[in-house]
Length: 228
Length: 214
Image (cartoon, rainbow over all chains, first blue to last red; front, side, top):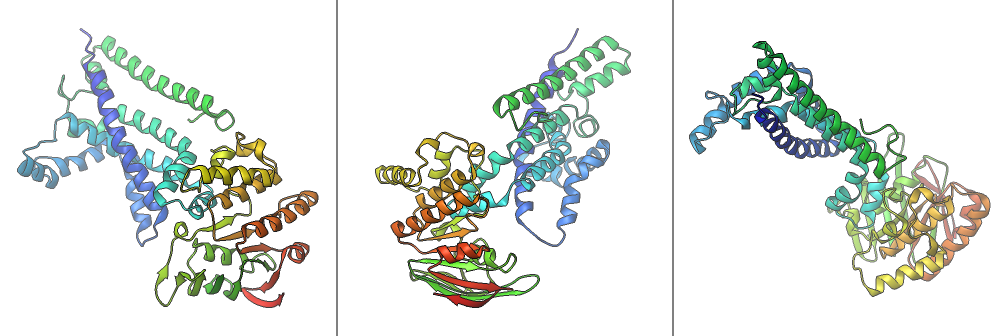
């Protein structure tokens, strides 16, 4: 019997991660662009770390943090009677952490490509920093943001190593597509594994294809090569 | 009246400048890299000078000793950038309305008046990428004036235009200054332009005033 549950769970987890990643990635890129401080390079390196660390290491570090004995895990258990570990929320945290560098880097590059004179022009026309951000910075960085969104969503959707460390593989509760593929293949159930492979491949392909089509229709000259 | 007395420590030299402008055109003339643009950016509030004071019509925008620094949005100072800095993702009309605080009949009247004076009434729906150099210059001027500035700063406003357009726009700028009756501070490295436009010309070199013409 083919189970659709991992598919829906994967999509839900990836969407929730994307929400956090967009918020955190854009804010971080915005703040880092405007501030100079000692140790900035170190902070940048930490932001990129989940991209280069093996996901299973990221998962291990998260386990130390939110596990039953971890500082955050114990705090949440004591104060709110909340347990993150081995729940879908842990999968969202894992997805957010591993996808964050992609959103951060894309947004940072997009912000860097903006002519700062345009933002200065808006300021001299009486715009607040908030208005400059929403009416000038963000629309001009939109393509970079969009590619960051697609990359982060796909990354969160395919997350395996960190997820299995913190969310485990509980069928019907925390089993996402990548986990389902692994465990189906391990028990020699190639049909089901293959079906999940097909679904996740189709999902990511149509996402990138669709976004490229949409972006091209919106701004023909700027995106001849697509967003990704 | 604009009164400027600033010092900015730049990498190669120190900009040290004092001048005043009534409702007139002041030209800052000098070679590139002499501190002209920094002067304009200081007046607009886009950079913070290291010392001095900037006062417009009795309002103190910058006073290093008193620790006063007003951000650009509070200064009501128009700025025309060298390459016009029109917003590429908006059409001409949206660009011109960007700095308007109160949308109403008065603003609509001003908009139509500006379009007429600058002969750009037919451009409203165009995107910035579809404008010629002269058109961009006029749209940038309209955008700056729509925000009802008390002072207009112009950074090499005509340098990217061909000769015929340049002469035409010089005349237009002078005309607009007479109509709006606000001080214009214009930066140029073109001696002819300084000669034509300037009621008063300051000659700058390495951040210092070396001569003046009234």
